[in-house]
Image (cartoon, rainbow, N blue to C red; front, side, top):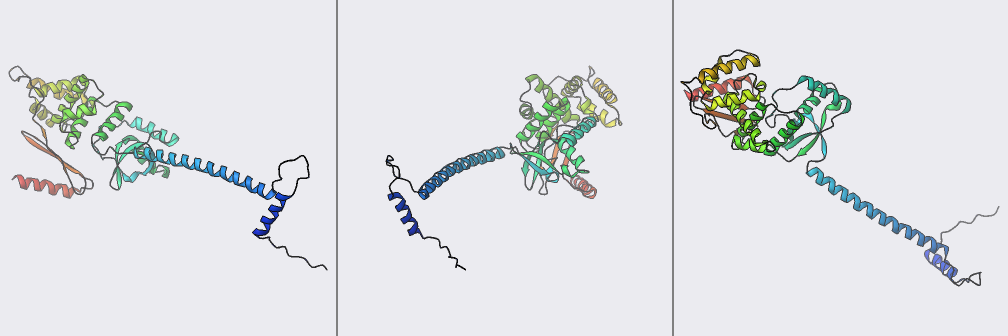
Length: 355
């Protein structure tokens, strides 16, 4: 049997010598003036050309990717990219809400829409320490919380992370959203201006109204200030403030300017749990008795009986707010997890301080 020869790979020098031989070999066609290109050289040239084209394409794609990444980062920094956030990291009470009463029928419709179609518009939050504070989207967040109890798909919610913080920008965003989606009642507009001042976001109620309702007419802002006055003077005693019509609120504001605050507060404090109609009857009776001809006082500007004190932030989180008037001091403590025993001890400390 013949012995098989083992094939050996030629070295580089041998390949170069073969190529030189092909280049020197005359053409078989006497009319061909160009020299024959070695096959190996031709293949190498074509490969180099294709490689060069691939490198150019890669560089173009890389530049495009880098540009897209830069635009994406800019959009994310501007709060235009929705992120999926766990519900338990979002503080729904980060700022005081303007909406006082929720429509359960509307909430049922929202729940069904979110369950069927998902959330079409992300909520807005601001980064706060290890978590996030809710700026707008209270009802949407509430819907996700309700649905998450039975469906794990709703344990996280799409959110735009804004840089508004808890300052004026956060309040403006919240008010603008509710004005567009479902109009606030006149009382709620005035109330949120007062609450924003109480949290130190604005120096005065007038400034708060001018910023929060900047798009409104001068006449509308004047009405908001009138309802803010009603909330400052009677908000802690009114049982159905949202039911006040615009006409009723303006009448109350006028009575307060004429010095009827004490009479109105006495009447509300003595009233039992009543419906909106009965509550307004109590207020009208108090206004009529206070504004009898012998007791009428000259009209003045905005009453200054109630003064908002600067809020104090607690180290554990939360705030202590206070209002003072000629005949009382109202203190509000905003703190999560406060027990009944701690609240009672706080009251006793106040009593000891005043005795």
